[in-house]
Image (cartoon, rainbow, N blue to C red; front, side, top):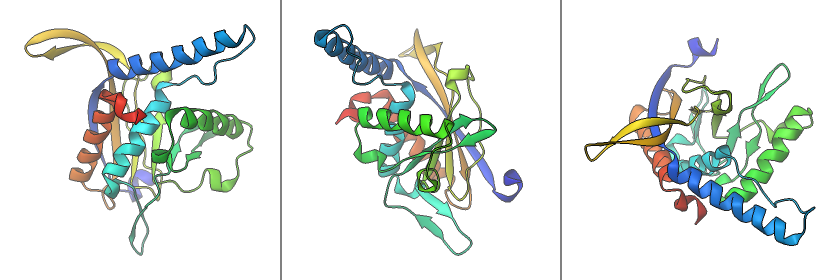
Length: 219
């Protein structure tokens, strides 16, 4: 049992999504506008999901905090140079984690099209082993099922998995005033042998910064 063999701890943070949702809408609207100009049968070149932007934010946070991009082996802790992100996809009989390789170097549109292709081939059982074995960190997003927050189980030998909940309108206090914001809770599950609490917290701070200032995902 993984929970018995891997010493887990958990860190959660709330992220305001309004800026991210606005950037996503602007990009998707631009793709739709371009398609309409081409003619009624033209399809938009892309349609970004929140998860596509989450993958990019995770990749940039891993680049900023490379100690979180690590795995456990009995011989040593392995720290990776490449930012390869495993993304959990539900298939018949369980989960598979196809990998977006070098995600820090790809733009969000490329990540989106790769993810659609990987997910479709995962569900059809057509992934090659190198497309789902490896990766430095996993993302599990249950937001589309309305789950507000949860803790995922680390995907060995990786050191961390990021559990992403649904965005929902909540009351937040800013400068002493109550305002409504779209808020998403994410929880980082960590193998304590690989990553300590300070590194985990630093990673989540970086991830939150990219999600709340999403222009940084586009440069």
